[in-house]
Image 1 (spheres, rainbow, N blue to C red):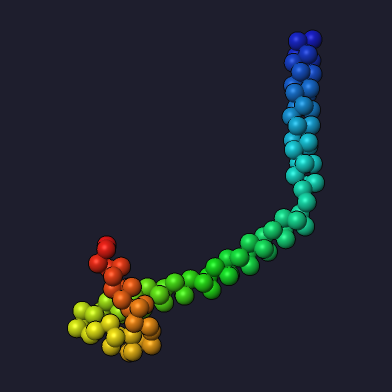
Image 2 (image 1 turned 180 degrees about the vertical axis):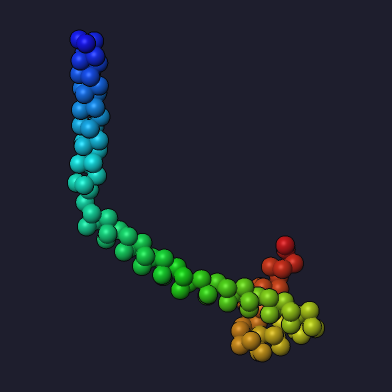
Length: 102
């Protein structure tokens, strides 16, 4: 009987220790600066939106490069391509030269 009571006492002490440990952890979690966390999330969302707006511009550049190369394959000169796409002849030549390097 005494052994059983001592065992229950040890289990109670261990459980109190576990509850105290989790209480301390939970207390730290609840004391986080939640307003700062919200502000950081909002700033991150704004940055993502700005990056998404930039994405189509880079895709447009790739489409323009493909179109320049396609027109060159059709036999148009850099001057004709530049006139058709409203670019400078140097830009067209640069795109065509970069193709040759790779």
